[in-house]
Length: 84
Image 1 (cartoon, helix red, strand yellow):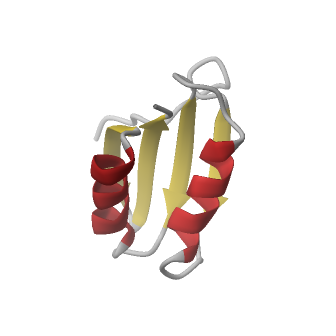
Image 2 (cartoon, helix red, strand yellow; image 1 turned 90 degrees about the vertical axis):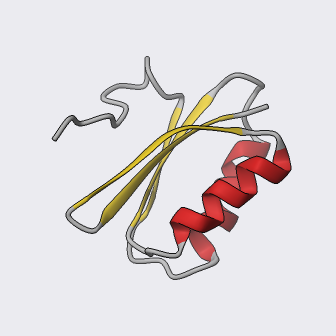
């Protein structure tokens, strides 16, 4: 499987580890992190809550932020969001 996670801070300005947090905490923490970021910056979020897939897709559709990519590997969901 291809690993699409941001390997360095050159690829993502911030990495948020929200593993073991239940819905809606991964999304709430991501929203908080995005507020402190500048337009075009990338945030990587790691989560283990399967409900986060729909949460992040809906959030990006509504907020205008872009879900650049996401993947699931061994129960860990990795999202890369780009701030609008």
